[in-house]
Length: 427
Image (cartoon, rainbow, N blue to C red):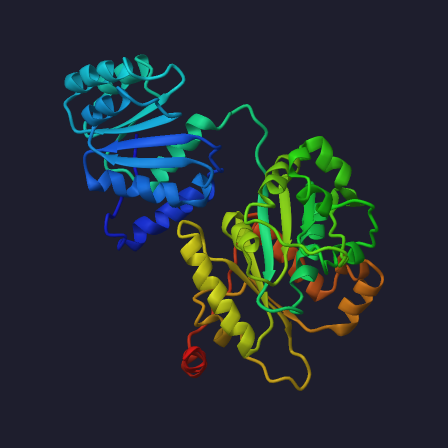
């Protein structure tokens, strides 16, 4: 019953960082209904923030001000949800009496979590014995709330859900897809782990070319028939690219228009995450409802950019937007690609990173021959030159994204002139 510190004003950087670390290991909560009855704003606020987190995106959460008495009156004429969160400042014996009254109006399948203000072992034991799912001592953080809800509604016997990693380019042609495919291949070979690559650029996707595949079916069949998607159907659509690497290929044709609803890929991603421990999402460079949804819901986001000003502007916009959409997650990762193109003026890695507030996890130099030969032969970089320094960087990225190592490089500040250009460009 130990809780993280909570800052109602959202001003405590330490508490916020604690939330980010705690939340990173949590898995999405299934589609349930939750109603909370709170006596204080200090409890209502983290519950409301928890409802806005991507891991709670499928839940329907309603927060009411008022404690157990309000809940009793409310459920005299309304059905109870899957979960009730109750705050109570009552002393232990009075709290137990109130909960007995509430039980008369609760459906048998409803779970109840109590947030109390008494750190009392007797009370905790009595609550658990009477059927309360969990008792948490105030103050509570947003991470506490999501953790408790996930623990109740996630089956401990179920297979773990795979992590999703979304790769997106700051501009077209920066090599995001190539990096995504090579990192996926590296993960599957370095760690002997099953990896699924989903090419989400249905019109112009290149994964089938890069992996030298020509499957008859792919991701289009899934997205246009969501009612058919399950593990068996998805397995039929996957093309085997390597021993532990499978591909959901894009049709890469223009015979129809690929306009989708924001949640069009949600079912596909959910099923794919139950199929493999690692899911690499190759997201095209566009800003639509479904692309925004995928980047919001992914466990990790990797932005690939080349070192020039338009890429810096676009990357800054992406980073700022993703921080708003994913306030309880680490900042997106950054890869600077195609560095050192002959005769091209470039922004240094340190100057590129400074206004973003994030250090690049890798700077990949320009090598037309290595990348060109691999693409033209339908091979991964590691298959062409295993000991090439660029291949070793790809391997490092695979290690970082799977939590096997951390980024050590730090950039130095110093880009006031470029920041000025970006600000002038927005006027």
